[in-house]
Length: 221
Image: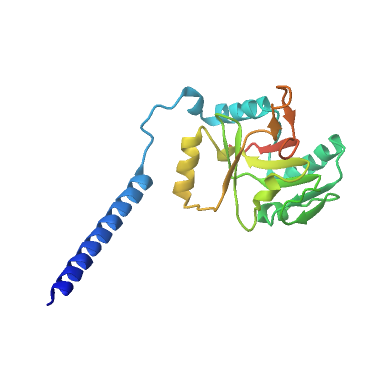
């Protein structure tokens, strides 16, 4: 074996050993992530349970100018949405994603269309995959049936959320995502309607997105 071949052989061996080490460390890191438990201190506000968790979510959401209407079942959603559209003097029309749960409902006189969000849309309707009681935050995943643009385009954003999907804090939210195996390209966290305080230090709604956020909370905890 020539000197050149000896050098190249050593380099290949070193690279193979390094690659194996990287793979082993990566596998170990992934295992730690899968089995990780919260060991740091969690404040009391992020340790609620049961109806206390749900009620705190409502309180926190309303504190940031979201409005909440509680319904008993998903079948009540079309009627509640229709009432809210009339109350807000909005047209009886909705833009939504290709969500099987929403598509299965009888929307009656409310006209529905499916597709990504559009600037000219008066109202969009999306289903949140979770909520955070600590802050009143809604959690949305992206996907073919849930275009992220529906959360940000339109005059008003209507959201349906199941009470059982509300977590006490962000720690529980990310743990739930890991346990479910969900791997969406985008996760959006929304707390209240769009706002800014840049103009004379006064809160103005609708600065960067919908002017109103209406939550329909299904009490199924």
